[in-house]
Every structure is written in structure tokens, then in C-alpha cells.
Amino acid sequence: MTTRDTRSDLLQGTLDLLILKTVAPAPLHGYGIAQRILVLSREALQVQQGSLYPALHRLEKKGLITSEWKESENGRMAKFYALTKTGRKQLELELEQWRRYAQVIGWVLQA
Amino acid sequence: MTTRDTRSDLLQGTLDLLILKTVAPAPLHGYGIAQRILVLSREALQVQQGSLYPALHRLEKKGLITSEWKESENGRMAKFYALTKTGRKQLELELEQWRRYAQVIGWVLQA
DNA sequence: CTACATGTGTCGTGCTTCTATATATGTAGA
DNA sequence: TCTACATATATAGAAGCACGACACATGTAG
Image (cartoon, rainbow over all chains, first blue to last red; front, side):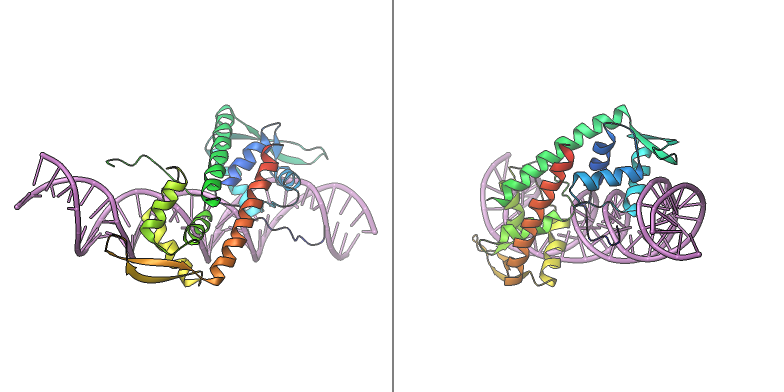
């Protein structure tokens, strides 16, 4: 990749949900989380490091994820984040909240 | 109404869109805008005055809406906001952006 | 040896929404 | 009459979040 033309401009509040969802299937490191979101969003959402790492620290401080240094697939060390029980509940909650919010906005917009 | 139990917690960036959309059919005053959003969202979105008026002033400064003091239906004076041409274009733009954003988030969430 | 990808992190800025507060008037009810 | 309440606008301060810019370290391909 030489140039990055994808611009994310995340709506405030959605990043936590995206991270929790991305980490849900299996523990993953920050760099991988951003990559995964980029792929799943079909290049639409590029999470910036300046947003990613503070968010991860925030989530960890809240007890929604835990971190552990492990060896990555390529042999390098990376900080793997895993969802806690509370985090899983929070994910369910935020999923539901997002769906409701999108629905409600839809009501207003199609009026 | 004695107590207000509806809590909005708007996602940052969506308020402008809601306001532009609400004002699109006909000029309306701030208080009416909040009421209309409340009704259309089926009591889900209660726009706070502390969010509403700064947003209106912001939009006016950007040239997306214009204001004019007029008599309300009940004979009281109120500041009516109307969409400008630029505002109408911006509304179309933000409508499209919201739809795309919701779609993209959907891709990530259903993965 | 020079990029580039991988990988984590902080700092300061800017923007937005919220809570709390202030102000003013008209109306309905006790 | 006095007391709420609905109507109507507005600001100040706080809090939160995403972002751009920067810093650092290592491995690998050309």
C-alpha cells in the first residue's frame, strides 16, 4: 500500500462496538483489529491508531477486555485483547442499541 | 408531563442531519423541531435545548439554514428556521452518508 | 541501505452533546 | 390569586471521543 485514500470518520460511540465485535470470536491484537475492521467494512472504515489504542485502553480499564502479550503468527510479540464476560454482555447491549438507534433514525428520515 | 424518562444520547453528527430533515418540508422554530423529532422518533429521541440551539446557530453560520422571527400558530413570536439551497444539498449529502455508514457498520456487525 | 509492513503508544486539538442555569410569557387549575 | 406547566430561546462549563502528528522498535524485500 503506497497511499491510503480510505477515510473513516467514525461516528462517535461506534468504535467501541466495532472493537468488541471484532474481538468476540477470538483474541486479537490492536493492529489486527484495525485490519479486520478495514476488510469487513470493505475498505470503508480505517481506524486510526490515535483512535484505536486509546479506545483499547479505555475498554480494558472498563473491564470489557483483557490484554496479554503473546507471539503473533509471524513470530513477533503483540498485545492480544480478549473479551471478558462483562465485555460480552456489553457487546450484546451495544448491538441492540445500535440496531434500535439506526431504526429510530430511519423513522425520522423517511417521514 | 411531570418527569421525562426518554433519554436520547445522540450519536455525534446525527443531530445536524435530523434538524435539516425536519426543517426541509417547511420552516419551523427550534422548539417545534425538537417536538417533531420526538414524535417522529416515537419518543426515542429527545433533543436537549443545550444541543439544539447551538446546533441551529452552527447550521445558520454555515449557511445551511436561515432564521426569521415570525408569529407562531398560537400568536407567540418564535424564530423560524428555513433550509437554504446549500442546506438542501447538504441534506442530500448527509442522508446518503448516513445510509452508507449504517450499511458499512452492518457489514462488520453481521460478520 | 532504503523503504515498507508490522506493532504500540501519547499528546494536543477540535468538535459535539449534555447538564445546569437563566429568562420571558400565556394558560389552566386549585 | 397563586402555582404549575407549556411554550420559547439562549449560554456556560464539563465531558467524551476521534483525529492528526509524532515517536519508537523490528523484520523483510528490493
